[in-house]
Image 1 (cartoon, rainbow, N blue to C red):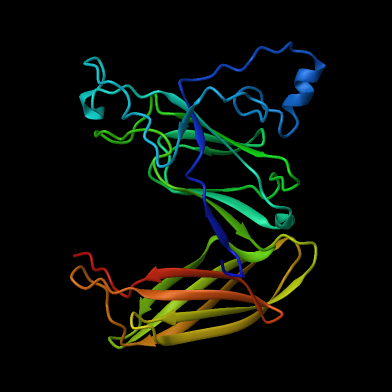
Image 2: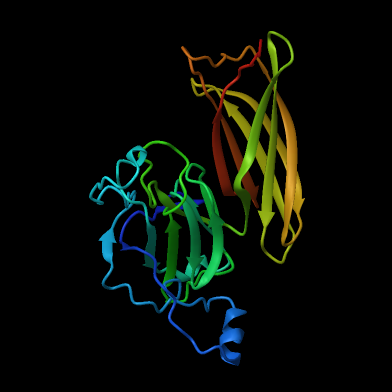
Length: 299
């Protein structure tokens, strides 16, 4: 495992699954009820950390909740005559004590359809589309003191769809846990935009967002390198920044590239933008993105 962040772990295994909605248990509407509703971590029902899911089905991801449904003629032919429903997923996991002070995220590559993501009893994310990946920041809510963290996801596919084909339903793509240092790139925080200047010369505009969640200002060195398909470095920028405590530092630079191999359908050439953050001569974060040089003309 690399010494610098991010650390990336698969979260695809050992989930609990329930088909159908789960009504929240009745509670007397007294002062304690209203008090609990205003406090993080006290959501009632399946999102609650103490909810008993031992009788739920064991599943791994990716998971399609619709494939196991028997087709019936009263359901839509567009969706394979299979009924779409409301589903619950839960997963418990522990984190080591050395993650104290780290930034922790969950990356979801795809969930169908509407979803609510609860973590340790708090609602952290509402999703409304099946075809966009998303990230959930757990930094302020995760435990690394021996307690189990509890992830609960409610998916409502009963009355929403985005296609006229068998879309399926559930957590149908991978889920990853991302652990980053207190100072590092924002999730998907680096962007490249190649621009043609002449037939031979291109400018690659690069923007990055660096987040510092600590209470101290941090001095960093930010390096951007463009790597050609053959592995050669063809552009580099090295700059120093002071990242304010508990803040975001936005950076921009431009790298010139001469005569790059253009991307097209028959020759989809991709270059790599390698972005590195150093502090005290130590790499503390790294991102790599693929991109191509091309123009688009609308006739």
